[in-house]
Image 1 (cartoon, rainbow, N blue to C red):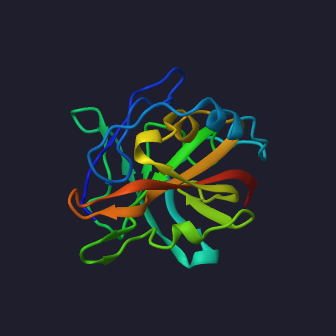
Image 2: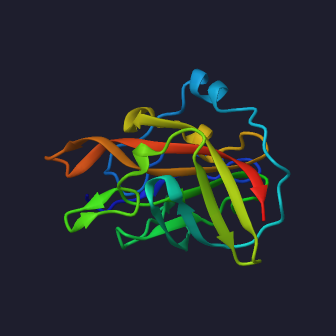
Image 3: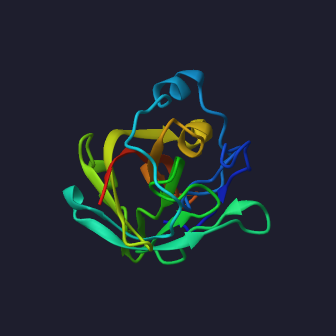
Amino acid sequence: MKSGRTRIGACAAAVAVATALIAGCGSADHSRAAAANTAAASGVRTAPSISRSTPVSFKISSIDAGGSLIALGLNTDGSVQVPADYRQAGWYQKGPAPGEQGSAVILGHVDSYQGAGVFFTLKKVAPGDMIDVTRADGKTAHFKVTDVRMYDKTQFPDQVVFGPRGGATLQIVTCGGQFDQAAKSYLSNVVVFSSLDSVT
């Protein structure tokens, strides 16, 4: 998979996103989410949120995925940084931390010409599966998957993924769908939606 960038814009209160290139999937622009998508992912009920702390690792037992997390910010052109290593996942630190009120976002590659990426099997996650995020304060935030969707890059729902959905939520984003050999990029994004279930 060609390494790329994610274009986002800042939003009111933190992370409502404008046009984006998600998790190194190529160079096409994204449009605003459709109203139906926004309605479907809003009003989520979660366990009580906790204070901000840097996430250090994650685990998705159902697909045997996990590893450390690095902090991702913005490039000088306003695009979101993505991990240089296709086996590494990263947390978008300009938004909420996992467990904090709002939408936390973790991004990573699905694959590379060198092999399977950190989220190679992300599309196999199912509602009810758990995502555990260990934080620097020693707490582990446990998220329950509520939905898994694939979006065409031209219809990527920025506001739904990066914007507040109610309570403490976590979205994980990678590439998916058909691979465009000419562009050396995937045509879609896989997004796992989850909500905070408990904290230990």
